[in-house]
Length: 559
Image 1 (cartoon, rainbow, N blue to C red):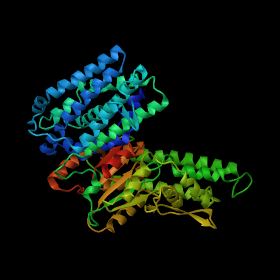
Image 2: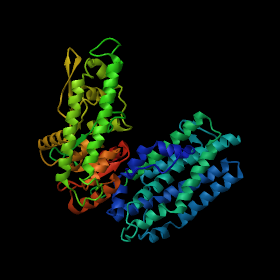
Image 3: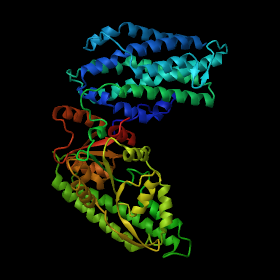
Image 4: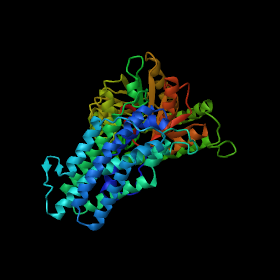
């Protein structure tokens, strides 16, 4: 899986639900230049010192907000809990300089409150004093319920800040060698991922949950807006940190010329979409064929499709198993030492031959005969995409900072379906490389023009496209199926989303390893610091996993 797994096992209260909901902001924070450079240990100490110099202003704002929130609640247990949180903040404020020395740095002699810091602290102060959006509550409110509501609003601004730093530090810590004592920021990371810091973050969330129980749906919407606004302001703060060295994130900012551009390759089915397009086209053939009309009866179409699908799955699994098993029937998965590219290529040639036979059987069956082009386009427009996928492609196409060419390489039987799917997001600029149905007066004949049937076809298209570009473009491939494997390995950065079982088993068998993208970027940030380049040297044996398009967005485009 990718690095960005949720840290909560269930929905829980409103605090955990909101933390789960705003995963895009979490990804952007983790994949920020500051966080990646810090994780790599290459962050200039001056940048770090300046960042933590802002803690004083945050802590002062927290202390004042807790003081007001304590006055608002009428439950003695809640008062004690908030008072204890304020006590910890004041202690941290008092010991800030000594803590910085414990982390291995000298406290800054002069401090200046940054604009991004001001925006967050002022937002917190306004919320705690009763100004929520366009509404201004009187701080002299006598109704206990109204006061409780203000306390909840105040904690909804503090909660995401605490959880975000705890999340970032834990994600980084998980990727560092526990025995490596040379990472200069390890002590700071230890403090933010400590049980004490975690306890404070969780206590704030528990209080927010408790104070929100009696709120109306409209008031809970206010809590959500405040939480989201606070997280975005904290995100702005992280991205506003000055980074003096080159950063691998967002990678589009490293590539700002025709010669030094980005070519983005992507699979379509189940990488971009929620369902496979082959099933959609088959279902379309079934539901658009009235009983007694068309090239074959409705029942025959359904039966034929089910038989074809069952046979495909069975023979595909047999093909994959035959690749992994040796002649004696012994599973050698995970035993390969280093990348066996020649063996892998031969194995995927077997997959390619199988895919071509399966397509020939499909064409011979006439299952797709009689489809109307207009029905296909309408189905494409309604095709459901993975969360964040369309937003990513829209912003890639609109991005002015980097010359990016996007190529979709797909086994889909109908390129018109793909074009109509992307056209609903105004993404006509994408280059589609797929197969085509044959039509007579907008009605499919059942035949197909096969251009992209197998892994070898995808690799050929990938190499042809890459060879036509001037300079030395950065090649990124996003996919998740076995058919993408050769292209993923040939790319400078191969990103796997929703890693399939067949891809993982075959890849491991031939010496391919998978690591979370965030872990890979930490290593590549160190390489960038040493060599000034992020291009791969030859075919890679390492692929990078993500759990969502949010991570891909954050890595390539950033904030």
